[in-house]
Length: 434
Image (tube, rainbow, N blue to C red; front, side, top):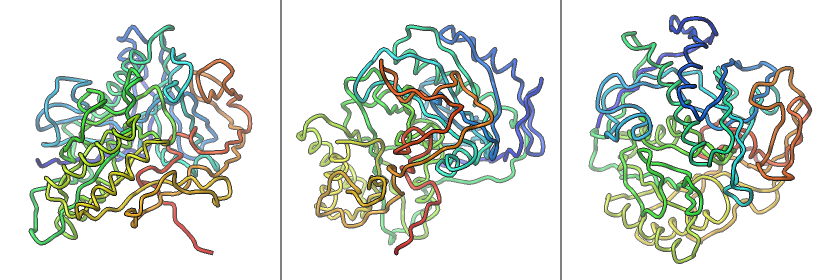
């Protein structure tokens, strides 16, 4: 498959009465977008706002972030299985509005009251130390503020939020149809050199068998007890892989992260030069038994072998015992002669002296750290708050911590900041040895 991503940079977003793109300026028709959103009767109210880098703005109740894209050539449409039929994607040409994002916020009270499956939202500061911690503070953000009908289940809320944000993102990107892009980037695996090492990306995907939504979907179908699945990297860039909008937090990838997966992008840059990209393996992680963890590890390693991989770049998402699945996968690959490199964030505690990883195997000898999620942050009060609530609700259950969004905020970890944890190495943190 050969995919062209045609880029239309956005340097300014204006709220107005029309929807058009010219010379980097995107004018947004608020009434048209809210009318589009409110076609879903599960959403009772919607509004639109703009937040620019450097403004003393705090965005609350964030559920997801998405980059506007639309397919103009090739099969299917972006976000297949969600916004349209299940048609294979990853070829043709897709237009993207770069430099901006649709940030979706929603007022929603979940029905699950305890455990890791409880719904949660995140927030974002567009200035100060909070902005420095997140990749999304550098973009022009069109913020959708949604209020959902009370009593919706988690899966209904997820579906309503996701369809609303994807519909808006697609509509915004449609203004570029017929226009000449600033640049075009091509993604094509057909360029091969036999002597280059074959590398696969093993992408660990958190799933929960006890949650209405598994956490990651492929063509809109939640991944649950599935074994490892080999896919073309272009499918990721065209929206075939998406996440859950009811549990937004730092270690969860947003839709924007999947669309701009930095490891996919990085491997593509070296494809045909230093390596040959053999594909992507989606690995279901967080099996509840050690037996399940062993099975998925060996299943993933076996699939990498069938792809004739010489090496594997291994990464994951979220936290907790699913890291055992990841480490066992590294061990299984190494035992088959497949060299591995792990890309992961660290823990380390407030001062960076605690245990950085939850679990180790001797075979994990090559690790790239993307930074710590445990470092504390002191955030100053904003001048403006955008979102469905002027409070920051860390979890949705009785007695959960709640603070005013207008006040200073102290964080003992970066989980609550959207984009606050660099899970795949997409940010520019560096390390200094003392």
